[in-house]
Length: 363
Image (cartoon, rainbow, N blue to C red; front, side, top):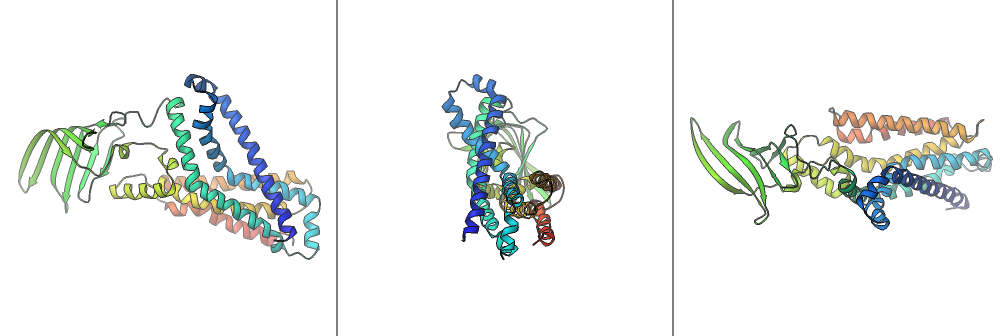
């Protein structure tokens, strides 16, 4: 690391952290103004609100816009260097263009590693804090405690041969029904069980079925058994029946991997959304590095109009990236685009943007 590297790297990091600090303050002020009535109704003190909500809200909002602020910070300080002819002087002294970009690489990698670690472990824990507070004090439709409406049936795979369906389920009472179970052998149903009620027995930590009708099919005959109550040992727990659309944001990456494997084993639908989230946690870190290089190359050229032109170009590039990201996500969650490709398509496209801008940059 030479003086040039330290000089650019210091400007890079100080500009970024100053920008993200100001943005965090503005975001908190705006959020407080929107939720003042909710905070008053909660009857919590300032300390409780800060620890139980804003300790989760601030990491969430910072991680959400982290790549964008890296991009803006790079354009801002690099544009100022270009307007002062510092970059021209650096290149005229014999420093090659790739050598000039080295501190940007270093700074981008440092911030990318920070974001990667935060996405895997820190932000999901923060989302738990924020989500629990909102569910209890702000969100009137608590996704943990509301009754799943009849149209939202729960279907899952109990084991290799058994499939279950629950018509409705109350996550607060841990009770639902009616429920049906089909056991399949080959292409034939060999057992059909139906019960009016399924409930979690906290004493034995197992499920209890009430008003059960058990039909075992044997060719043209069947054996019918009726039980008032029967204890069943299923491979799912009450938490597994909770349909919280924010689950993917609250799980750390190892927990999310386990959740995806479990849902795949059960034959659940809508797994693309979970997989896109998992792959994006890794892809976003590469996005930080790509936007760093794009910002440096775009803003490193002295143009008439100064920083305003560079910021305008930067916002156009950022908008293109966000649009590409949104389209790929929709095509995956609502269509047949593989989640891995959907998460990495924006990065793959902007790799070519980096290469194009690098070749066209005056050196």
